[in-house]
Amino acid sequence: DWHHIHLGNLALSGAGLLLLEATAVQANGRITHADLGLWNDDQEAALAALLASLRRWSPMPLGIQLAHAGRKASTHRPWEGKGAIPADDPRGWTTVSASALAFDADHGVPQALDAAGIDALVGDFVQAAHRAVRAGLDVVEIHAAHGYLLHQFLSPLSNRREDEYGGSLENRMRLVLRVFDAVRAVLPERIALGVRISATDWVEGGWDLGQSIALARELDARGCHFIHVSSG
Image 1: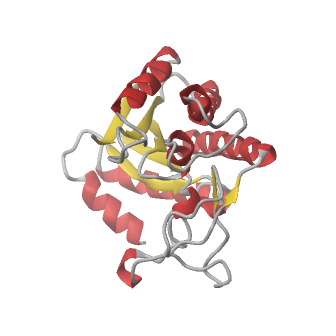
Image 2 (image 1 turned 60 degrees about the vertical axis):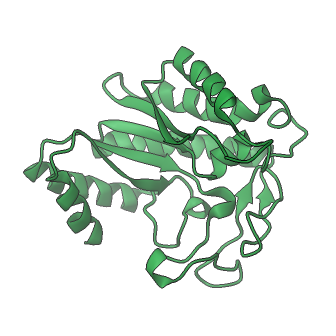
């Protein structure tokens, strides 16, 4: 009901596009335990009903961010206090990331994704994209910003891997490009597909503008319709 009220208000704002909040493709990818998700049939049905309600009153194009929070997941709702919820709390869970490095002292150490975990993640982005299309969305945005999971693979600050997903820029971009290619392959031409990035970590030795430009060029060559730059 909260989303019906919140998004209904925004849909009447006169903006040219409404993007839903970061929507997790896996249960452990939610930022908070109450975030939107799109990994099962009940969520898809609820989303479709929400979109139908919005479209009764507004012609605004509607899109969704498909996301995974990685090591920044399992947190309290903003109005309940800041910080992570421990994995042993009934509302919390063990997080995952590119490497077993905690985000800060308040967050637990995540599990580094192995090859099977990466394959499952890509598959779940694809399944969420299928669900988004069936629900009737016009735009899909892959969330690779804000220090969330795909950003964690991009940034050398959080990615210390020694396999094909770590080290060089080419390797650190590999997962984002793989997710993009997989999602692009299943979306109809009428659906716009873009990627959200933070153009810089604002930390020396981290993700920066030059690497963002290199990523944008790779995405452009693959048919990316837009880059949504959150920072820098």
